[in-house]
Picture 1 (cartoon, rainbow over the protein chains, first blue to last red):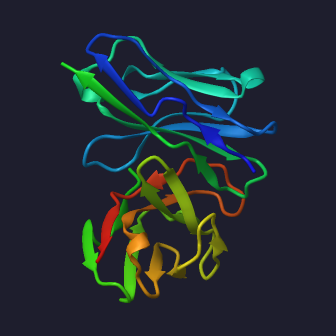
Picture 2 (cartoon, rainbow over the protein chains, first blue to last red):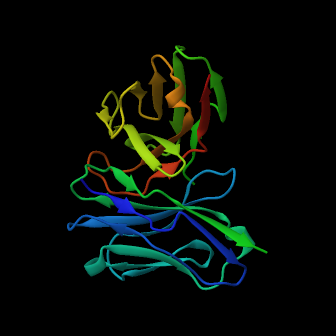
Length: 114
Length: 115
């Protein structure tokens, strides 16, 4: 069965530090890839997505992610985090053999110290 | 903007009670989904539906059922609530019908506590 792994469960950074959150999936076919974010007390919202084309995708609030097909990875990056980026981040994969189902990673909690 | 609403933000129920969680979307989406979110486990799919009166089991359907009588509304039913169903429940919707890989849009969640 397909799976999605987020290697970091809890990341603590100081403001202005650079961020990279890892995401790997286990499927060799066609995938759509997503990063969602859940700010404290708020609903899950889309940060960015990759469907096709340029493997480097840019999302809201200065986030970007790079799809590397050979590594089955879709890592999330931000060059300089802010305290307001404190949230939980979820990677998700929609594979072409899953009938429209999203498979989520376990989530990474990011805490940014002011 | 897509809007997905859930009937309650917080709910407290007793073991054995029948529980209804309601979800409504206003974008005429074909697909609707119910997930539960637990710390360290991410989101797990309970049931989904790609059309009115259609339903498909997700990864953890045991102890749950669903109902979709109208396109905009998708209900999750706990026939006899148990303490291990204490969780955050998230509803989502998307375009496209069966097999669609489109973006899913999420509601605010219902935090259910079963005593």
